[in-house]
Image (cartoon, rainbow, N blue to C red; front, side, top):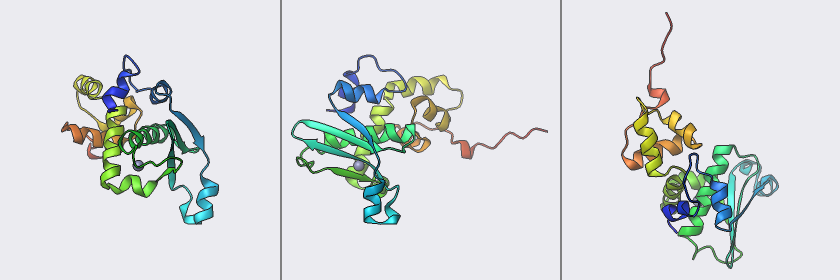
Length: 178
Ligand SMILES: [Zn+2]
């Protein structure tokens, strides 16, 4: 399924996109998980490095996200793992979980990049973004990020993908009072 098809399963799209409702609607189970014991088993340096995992067993899909994730992080992990389910279903061999490491997701490798774009399309639908973008006098990436409940970096990647120019809070000179 494409991100557009998945959004359609929820009917009228509202902002922020209700990713949990979308998962439920598609019969996908998800749950928080404490990966710390597993991380510690590998090495102390691994603590905090597992973002999530996805398990595909026959037709049942289960997505896990790190228990201590922020709301934005949790939403992105759910969308990103759902992307892997749609894109790499053949590779997710039965019962063999795909574990998401922080370093992999940021690596920009082919598969991860495609999953990130998919997740961006899901959490930031084009028409909804354009609507909000046009209503702002100055399109600030952090203002848009807040509306869609995504991180600023996820929003900026989406804006770049769509070729929409934007202002970053860091690049805007602060207003000093006299
Ligand atoms: Zn991934």
